[in-house]
Figure 1 (cartoon, rainbow over the protein chains, first blue to last red):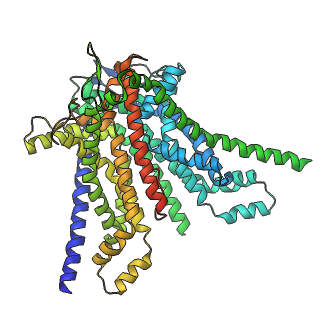
Figure 2: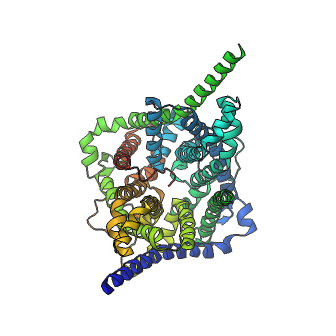
Figure 3: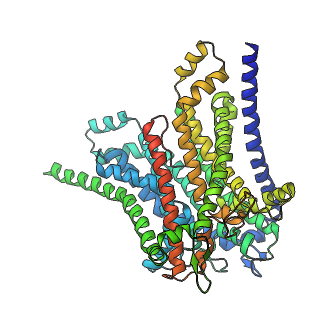
Length: 282
Length: 299
């Protein structure tokens, strides 16, 4: 009996130690990033274009480029993603078409991001002749984000109790009226959470925009959706590998700003979700 | 009359959403056909076997060679290395969180894991390059730490959130009654965990592992930055390697549209697409065999 208890203590103890060993170094490295990057975050760094082959000045065009790409991604992925989820949950029957859609979504979710980059380049830049541009980057990132948004929006719609739907239909509302006025408003916070999480993922992607939208250096901000842009993730890649003589603290600064943008999006999503959970508990 | 009109309207809306939902099928088809269309040239010019089993990759030399084997092996080594680190660690963490940890620790850990999953791969690559690699270099006394090992380590850290959160869902889905029955028969909590909970969650844990591997093999920026990018077949875990994804990302900028090099990189895209497709298929078979976990595409 004693032996048994000892074994249990040892087993669970080992698990706790392992968890600690896996999580703490990762958090420490991220803490180090914050610590190293913090001094670089001056007003000039955030609001000025780079100078002298990216070795001086700031990262303003890259920040704006990333925000512009993010807005574009939302405009592509959100209508398609939510529309697909509405179809799957509210309208789809058990048939071949529905099955095909589900297979397609699962496989799209597994496609590596660099393959999306190849697709965006081959399809939009070359075949359709749109050139490297903000629009193509947003399309590529939008397609990449689509599976995430579909699956979270689907979960959000499924979580709306059927009794809501029956009540609305029993009062004489049509299916579409029910979906638009009853189901969607209830599911909206959860849909937004998923969308923000997906978009946050897209904002940090590098490989899909390398050949579709991003350039190493341009002092200009984009005038139209057909302009090339600087983007933070690609900027970070360039200054830490390809561009010589960039001081480490500028690289840490860029990494920290990227982390902050993505982290802020994640945080907003988590806050919305927590508030929803608390509301449901009350 | 009015009802009939509104019936048409309702039908129209249904078809409208059906059309939107159909874009996913169209997109998958377009990706598939575009990769093959652009990559076909290399398979017919170089030959499928020479491309996949060739050991020399000299795309810009006078007589170019397009043998992708070093990269295919590079991808496999780095992915398996990452799996060997991330799968045991991830499942252990999931067991700790699901079975042992107090509720508060569990909630905090879940939020942290979600935030870790959201960190962009280029940031992981940057940290691997500037923080991890120098430490590994000093610790192991290597000439350069940009090796398969470092890449595997960084990939393991990156796939950990996927493995942990899906494993935890799988453990969560094991019915309480199983645990209670085992405890009631006098088993300790540890025995219950090892002999009852883990076997019951087996297929979910396998699926978590597969999805972790899938994430690792498709990862691009981090491996491009830390794997060393030597175009040789590695003999040793501390040799530099180059993966399929890294080659596409590194070389695409220098190619001419329609040229053999361009086609060869799309050919690599086909190889990569096929590998991830197979991994997905296996995962899916595991998922259909069990209903214990819902498939999440969010991680």
